[in-house]
Length: 68
Image (cartoon, rainbow, N blue to C red; front, side, top):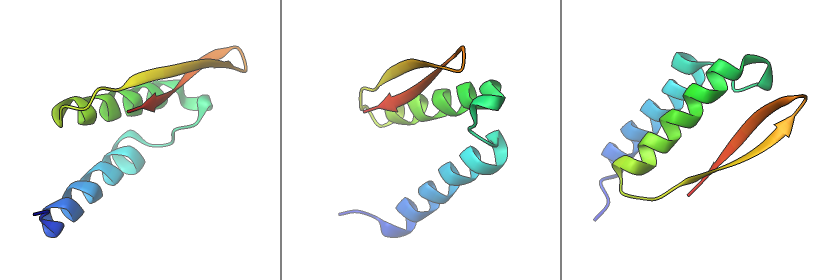
């Protein structure tokens, strides 16, 4: 059975990490973009789900989506 309270707490913690701790995910701030990607990859690894990066060029920079 899913513990909804724990699930809600975990989701809030992830959202806070992505939006407040790491910050904007814009290509203008690629350092933050990379930290967000690492956080998402670590999350999937912790729950034993494989993920991969789909990287692509954007305005002479490389950005990625994380796909699980």
